[in-house]
Length: 81
Image (tube, rainbow, N blue to C red):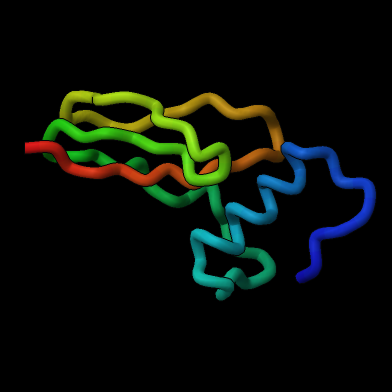
């Protein structure tokens, strides 16, 4: 897949995140809404991979973020102590 043309930034991030998160093995028709939430068992720091932004420290919990429609983010969670 080549992401070029007149895509809005959110649309570009949606496709780029889907490709990144599957290691490039995304199949047409995969139901991305069926992916269960991730529960982190310990305190952790979250970093946004696309924006290279530190999203801070968080307690053990389910990670949720609200995103615009047809958008995506890659979040890196690092366990702390």
